[in-house]
Image (cartoon, rainbow, N blue to C red):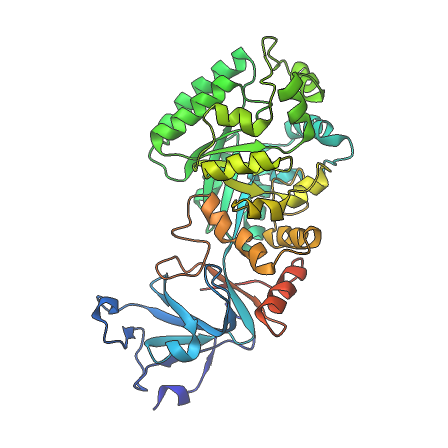
Amino acid sequence: MPAMNRPAEIWPMNLFKPSAISYQLSAQGVATGFSLRKLSANSDHLPAGSRQIKIHRARWVFPVSSAPISDGAVVVADGRIEAMGRFKDLKGTYSGDVVDHREVSILPALVNAHTHLELAALRGRLSGKDGFVGWVRGLIKVREDILPAEIEKAIINELAAMRQRGVGLIGDVGNTRMAYELCQKQKIKTIFFREFLGFNREKTAKAKEMLAETGKSHEADDSFHVAAHAPYTVSAELFSALKSWANKHGKMLSVHLGECPEEQELLAHGNGSLRDLLRERSAWDDDFIPPGENAVSYLDKLGILDSNTVCVHLVHLSEEDMTILAARGVKCCLCPRSNLFLNVGFPKVEKMLAYGLYPALGTDSLASNESLSILEEMAAVRKHVPGLAPEKILEMATLNGARALGRKDRLGSLAPGKKARMISVPAGGEGSQEVLEGIIDGAATIPVKWIQ
Ligand SMILES: [Zn+2]
């Protein structure tokens, strides 16, 4: 029986009901089971043996690293992307299972490039009404009252919620091992940044001891990296120690940078409400000599900024700062809804793009956000930067995230050789731009399905 005429099998479990249809297809019209043959004269592309193949067809395919494809398809062989293009072009080239998802858009899995899962139990417990430093003070206090079992449960729930909203890769920052260990058992790939703080001599020495101890057991773990909390909580000596450990072991270093105006006050003049907070916490260094310059120049002079450094927030950036960050190839991550929650400003997204930076998106923690949904971060960018093309916003939420987490070669876009970590969302609208706008505008409720 010709393959196209065989009865269609509905797969309601993973696909939009009732539109997704799966069937066997071969160019010769013969059922091929799960074998794949690329029907090409080019033997370089012939698979070595029998492989499991699926051809995922959809109204739109958004590869991100190349132009959107109408009536597109993604060919997946053994969990990796083999090809993508127009369905009509691919169907004559590849044979295997065709899964027709019909009126949906296929996108790469989203990336939450910066969060703190260990704060997952803090949703709704804090507000930004007392300013940034008041919020930090509240966070320290509230955190002390939460039991480990409560934190564990919240982390597991939030990991599930993120997956449900299409997140397939996370950059997680933590002061404890709990989230790191829980993430090992999950389907979402997590890049973990062990965070260190230490502003005065005593706390710097303790942090360096901890780095030596913790770092040793994770030297070979390519998911383990380090974070320096921020220039107002990490001494120059600790920054240098963290960066030199990272360089030695081929690791990334993450840092909160330019999140609040108070940081600038401390670095320029050595005073302000952050100094008061450090004093309250017995963390202030009486010998601190303010570098007298802004955070980007300060870290640049310390040798911290390079392509293995991930700078997070970047709300308070001058054009000179952007020039430095671009010249050093620094990775950037923005957390727009957290910035709005804390009322610290909004990152200059268009300018950053114009300066050759590739901003990723993160949610930061539930201490300063209502959810860990990257779709909703995309919606916040669209709302506050209405002139920005929706394709750029999708790129921020996918490819730039993978780039920021050192996974650009494996994830973040649909391209041959990459992992087939893909989601589908309904595709309403005519052209690709209208379809993407609809997805972003519907961020809060749009149904998301994983393509298996
Ligand atoms: Zn953060």
